[in-house]
Each structure stands twice: as structure tokens, then as C-alpha cells.
Image (cartoon, rainbow, N blue to C red):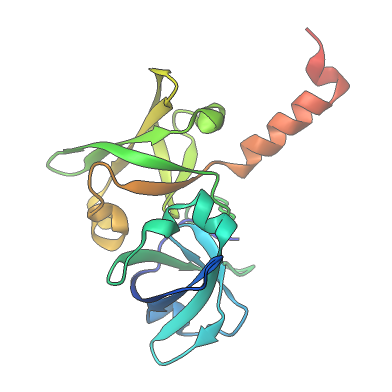
Length: 208
């Protein structure tokens, strides 16, 4: 479990193609201060397991399913990635409940800078649109953000949403340098998904 508050930007130091999987080597400092084998670290919002630990770097095995469903298939050596350790029972929940289980991939459609913040518009796969609401929470590449607005595109591309990024987010996360057209991992609110299932499967929820 994570909160969507990025602890540091790590760097992809190596990519080993294993056929039906990839082993990533990532350079980091903060998230390794108390890491151990088997620990969970979110990489751009994807929960990965520490497979090996070295001096200033760690490795994780990324299975084919994860490569298919997330933007990790597109990372290259030298790329910076958002890192967050799993929460502890005493951790402040500074963002929202994030599982590290990516629901889909969006694409940055536009960036509109202003004096004190930047508005970013991101595409939203049609199957996820119902879980995203104005002023609700969404994780973008593992970053807990508040949705400013949601709009239907009126096409098979689904919908789009906007977020406002403060200077701190721009400086400390990968959203500071993501370009228009880049893919980003999206995780919608787990509470919304549970509520939907409860409503649809309960006798009271199907009454007209």
C-alpha cells in the first residue's frame, strides 16, 4: 500500500530482457535506506518487489502482464522514475490510498504553464472514466493528484482529465519533464471500484 507521495526520483541503470519478463536495475538512495529483499517499492506507480540489493541500486523483475498493462515497457536506461516505499502503520497519509496496481495507461495531451502552477491534460481510457470525478483523487505515475476537471471526448478514446501541478510536484517528480504524447500509468480510486461492485451486486442497488 502506498500514499502517492513520491519520495525520490530514481534512475533506470539497467534493463535485462528475459523473454517473457524484464529485470530492471534502478539507482536510488532514499528508498534503499531501510529496504530489504522482498520489500515493495512503487516505480512510476507500479508495485514492484526488491529482488536484489546492491550499493545504491536495486533490481526488480517485471512480468509480461505488467509490461502489457503499464508504461514500464517503454522505459530506457537513463530514464528517471518516481519511487515510493510501501507505507507503515504510522505513516502520514499525505495523498490517498494507492495500491500500486495500475488500471490503465493514459497519454499527456497538453501542458499549460502559468506563473505559479501548470495545468496538464491527460487522456483517460473509456473503461476508467466512471471512476474519475472532479475533485477526486487519481494516481498518475504513482503521484497522488486531485482531479480538476473531467470531460468526455465524444469518441472511442474515452475521456480526458486535468490536474494542476504545483512547483513542488514539478520539481520532485517525473511530471516535471514528461512531454506531450508521453504515456503515464493511471490508478483510479480503489474505494470507487468497491462501491460500484457493492451497488451493482446488492438487491437494493438494482432497484429502479
